[in-house]
Length: 355
Image 1: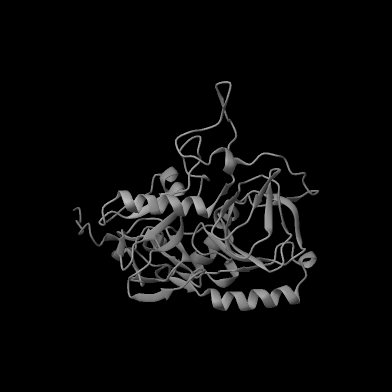
Image 2: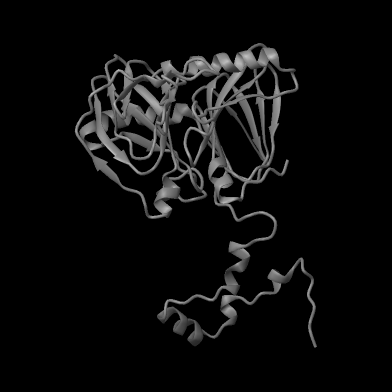
């Protein structure tokens, strides 16, 4: 006789590891074998995946104090990159990750310092938080670092950082390091200092809708634009706000100007403007999200968690969770930088928007 079970609770009736005799479990262990059925609840839960990523808020005031202190405790020669990692407690602080695929770090460069040339397999971007006078040399292209600028250092490209200014410069690093590390493909190479070329992609692609064309030949560079100035992104947001109705969100995506695709192939990057007093609910989507306050002050609500972000604060929200953002000013707009795992999810075929 066939026994029929309710399709909605079959996994609840699966056998547990402790149901198996100890001697049998020991024999499995000796042969590097594991029974699947006791673990199915965890790896294939109903409806919503098991998520380690927790809603986490990193106030910049806390980070900055400790980062400046790190500048006095550890010279750049002893650090390679002087960074405090924004670690999500849900993954364990030792894992140094903000979500399943995103790493965040606040990096400090003091006047006169040079962070030497290296390249690595993880993709990285830099969101400049504070200071002037620093630059990043990426693949020979020298990129000035101004507050709010987004600078790419894609996989495999040589890069180094220097500082010719007078005050500390701090930026937010966003890497796909957790994914690359998980796939056992994470490594770096050290190299000599680069020579700067005259190429500046952010100038060549400074106007939307047109691309440089040398005798009808378009650029074949994988990353034709490495610096995305905040002045341009902010101007685009303000222009959109004038054109769109008050009900439409004001958001732009950082893209490859030749292909229209995301600037990097694993993580997506965006800038968002909230009108004075505006409240915006972002739908529950599969990727985890990171928010960084460029200008203004935003109230953030993620499920039962509520907090306020001021300029240079950063937070993370897990996937499959709606996020509500509210501009706490009734007179001026506020601006946020966002990063998520959407390109990765789309490539894997698991991207969802549940509204």
